[in-house]
Image (cartoon, rainbow over all chains, first blue to last red):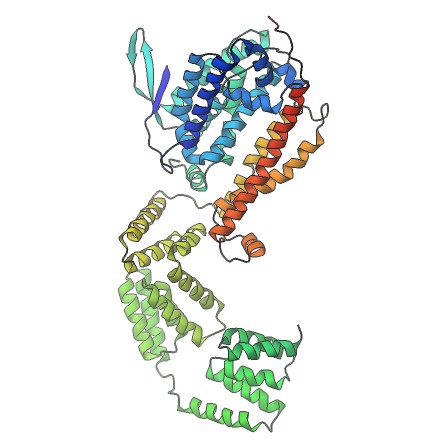
Length: 228
Length: 342
């Protein structure tokens, strides 16, 4: 299952300027990672990614690494999948917030994703990178604001590709659902995963803060149980 | 301020034609000093009703029975009172107004306006009828004229005074007036302002803009969107940026402010709160006391005032965040890269 596009229109704004800006910045930083940092990736990641034992001992870049890690990716597929998800879910969340408050919410969701990751995997020396924690926050916000929204989704049935319009609630719950078992295994058995499942859950649950960032009219619509 | 200074200001206001201001000052003086002859004398010239003028003159003569000028003026006023036709029709006018109100309740506005005018034909000093016309008339000019008449009949009617001010504002700046009404949750009134403006405008671009607003408000009414007071929106939006700042400050302190205290980071928090408040205030257009206190402006402040508030807000929000980043960069300078664990 792979989300491809949000099929519903924007209500308040014409163009999702902040979503596009974040995507462009992520791509530019990925370019720097590949063509400028290259072989020195370890020292680069230790400085600018979130490493729980460094965060907890107040060493390294602290808050800066918490923000910069949201713009670092481990490979092209990692980058593309995250940016596509941000494009699909971010546009209408930005529409409901306005660009600057959307940026604040995005950074907050990413921060809370890294905080939960740090608290659960407190002794980890492996740096955590990626925008996925913040994007799970955006997905959670989308679920709160547009539960009835429909997402054009690529579904592979055996080798047959289908792209139905699926309700956002099922798409988001699918992606959250597949985090739960690995997250429990990390917590109980200290299992080793290359995917930062706890950051995803941290980001997702921080979505409740979206209510502090909504435009006044969008918030009134949310309270009125009507389409935001 | 002493009463002689007040009297001086009142006289200046009366001479400049600012009758309401002069009357308020003079009433204040006679309240403190009921035997102030000059104040009563000037008051007799600035009050609107005949009865009030007579009372003011009688008070002057009680204080100084030899004031011949006022005695002559009083006699003139009394003869005016005697020559005024008796209000024989007041019962009939009240009956017509009652019928007009019943029509208005049935949403038959045309009949209601017609009956109210009939009541005024019977008795043109019928204040309630003028107020009723001002309330139900869809024509802004007619509303203003009716309110002016009502206010003239009874200058102590503060509701009529504020309604008159609002109606005049609506005529001068209809978009702003409609926005203020919408903020106050008075969608019906806001629609009335837009509709009145649409009827008057000759500019097609303005008309398109007004039409979009009318469609939007009608949509809100149709969807039964709950009204959220601007103060509540400002309070809600004020929390966003400080929450981000607290989260980043906590990360900077290793998630344990007791083990790794960095007190100066907390000093940034009040700045972020104030900045976030100013940003919210600049965006959520509302009739906030701050516009009056700082900028001396009524209503939701001018575009310039909002720009200043937003700029100050961004400055106060960004500077503490930059300080955290500077602290991070400072720590990074003394940071030794650990070896790979694998």
